[in-house]
Length: 351
Image 1 (spheres, rainbow, N blue to C red):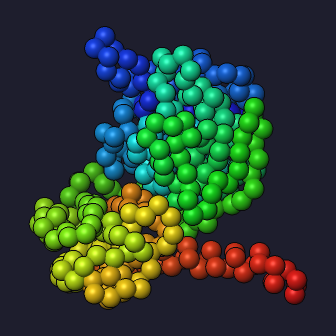
Image 2: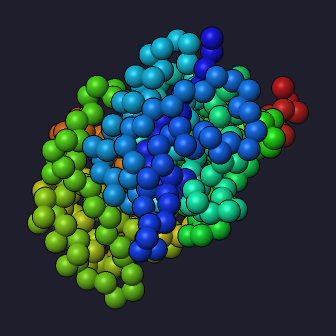
């Protein structure tokens, strides 16, 4: 019989308040199912991977979730997988799984903004929706998805957009792929996905081998933080730059030095939406790219770091990692351009 498997990792959806008023992840997966607002309409099994607040997770923990999903899908009777997860780093774990996900069946992440013991908790409805998405035939071949507050998002490009609101996630550059309500799933778009990486090759158990740091750029910043993470052993760095990807001449010079020493530098931005663009000189994006930084398009720092971590864990060699990073980002841009051309009114008019 076809079934859905729920993998529980903790987070607010599993959190209860203790005698001291502190909230800690505690509930197992079976307890989450007991609170569903409606029958799932499909057999559901559960597995507890771990029970942690997602702000505690490491790349090795995220790989453990990926392995659990991969092993679950080895059973052909499984129709789809749901992962319950804390919202703080849900965007990282979901994207990591998507980078390695080669199966047509969906893996759907969800969670909650209110704890399990809240009288108005959103976890049960989010979980019921995620099960419906995982069970939906139209969710096949979409990769890893995020189902939250009635909306369905792709893993890539989705991020937490509010600290406390129930509608906590957004995909600023693409929007949701669809919606789910009362068990009915509607899909209106498909995500762009590169060729999956090999999960068996990903070895993040030695943290220094995949260490990737994010360094913020801001008006008046110097290079001390950038140099400090490199001195601490970072093998890759993501610049969280201003605007379309700008810094200052001092930062640009340090980027050139780091790239020359074998550190992979990616250029992202702190701005909510829009692509990185190598436009400005005098330490702006054009100078940073000339110095060797790789612009990440619409991929923001949290997920750019995940991509670099995955590539370091698979390939190790900085030169190969840089090439794979450029290829992955270029493929996404080219695919997006092709899709836009195929769906443009002019193309449709001329057949």
